[in-house]
Image 1 (tube, rainbow, N blue to C red):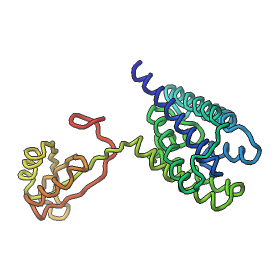
Image 2 (tube, rainbow, N blue to C red; image 1 turned 90 degrees about the vertical axis):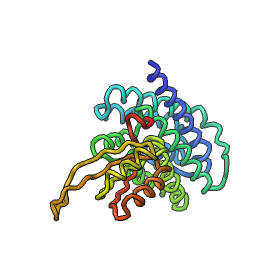
Image 3 (cartoon, rainbow, N blue to C red; image 1 turned 180 degrees about the vertical axis):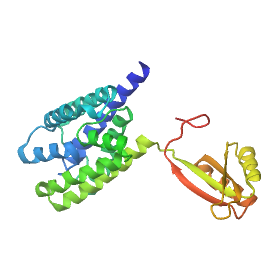
Image 4 (cartoon, helix red, strand yellow; image 1 turned 120 degrees about the horizontal axis):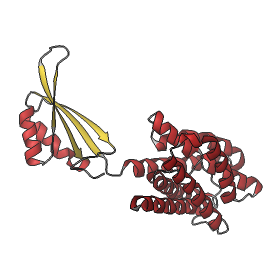
Length: 276
């Protein structure tokens, strides 16, 4: 129940931040967005339709057509995300006083707020509907990041909106959407990324002792052999925080200057010794 309540609060907070970004930065500066909200904004510019109501209607149709893409839990949170986003869009749509009239600032901070809002909703296990539903499908079955998947689908909508808002505003919109996509990835994947290091050395024992002794980190020893020489080799696999990386590299160089080291960025690590 506590987890359930936490997710609902994340959705409410995310939906509100999302609506503020749209109604106080994006729309007053005649910018657009991707996905369903982009279509919603264009219909507002062209026909004056309420963004909140239009968003609710379009997403209701998409939910009905694609309900099988999400499990029951995800569907519940997605419906909540759509309802709260539409509600907050409707509640704030009559107060469209721009925070700034500078299109670049509006693109940067509008993208930031929209990204934070959508990211928080994603973090709850739901989505804001529209292209977000398709993005979750691509994330689950194709391995795409949520931000990149949304970015691809959003490009189509944004390019189409150029006929309404013009080329210059469309270019600013691309900036906003790119920023939003990156923020979504940071929120969902984690701001505190880790580093996975693979170390191949003839002196793995000394390196492992320094890692476990001086850095107080664990290391896994993998047994392999050279493809050409067939000589047996020991490989160390270590996970550290990015702030620890320079220390680790110094220890490896000290123990074996000829060690072969491969470093990968890791977005999330689950298990003892790392925060979830």
